[in-house]
Length: 361
Image (cartoon, rainbow, N blue to C red; front, side, top):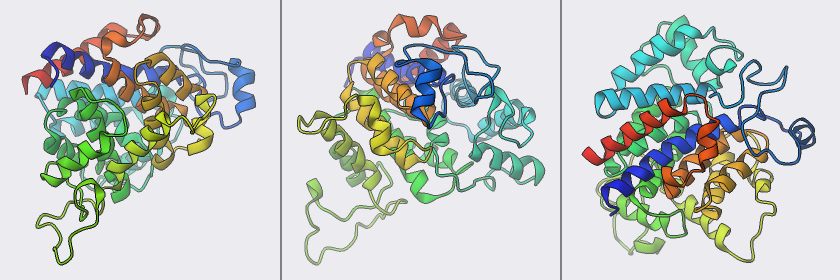
């Protein structure tokens, strides 16, 4: 286990890494034609940029956050003020501070763009007057990860609480079990990194030990090291909420690929072409896991390759930034990324306050 200062550094790094990834991709967000991306931003994006006229987030400026960063801020404020996850308080903030600014269309609200899952929740909550808990939809995207990563940091030392809180928060906007399981799995990985582990080929076995002892709600029938179950042995008495542990196993495969000398994605930003450029969670997670394993000690390379891959590079950069930030710590994030980030001191204060909460739990 890390000493308190190292743990706090990693926890704050995970949060600030997400904010930086969000802001870095604000300008070049959602370019699926890479030649168009290079035309508008050059061969290599290395810092914060303005969105181009007529593109996503038009009107915002370099270093500002998208709506994902806005919602992450709401989550942090709620966690800090309540000293943990308080669903009633978080939902109140969503009602009062976000939904009051939306009109149900994509180009609206903070960041000048509202994602599919949030638009669907807004319709059910505001137009249909449904209670929270009946607001989830079927978007297969990473929007829940982009806010629940703060929950993962908060409960990094308590994986059972981490899994429960992330599950409950995710289903407010996304109800597909596969999406929920992958969201919880990301949080479990991030929690392990905050604790001091690295994004490597051993990460999944560490997670599976938590499944075996009942701390993560995934169903598994294999014995240790994924060996076949013993003949005649029944299912575990406590079946997990999620049908299989596969979402926990994926990270190790991406990490193994990143360290295998016979496997090379060159340049690494082409991870977006290997795993897919679209928004769906099953495209985003493998790319983020790969980059954070490949550059586990190099925050700048990890997040910039995430951005330069195009497509849904904002989600890719948020996830990669958080995973890598947890490994290098806040102290390992280059100062230039802090200097160019709008309200960096305020965001850093939130990150450090949440990190202190991890220590106190």
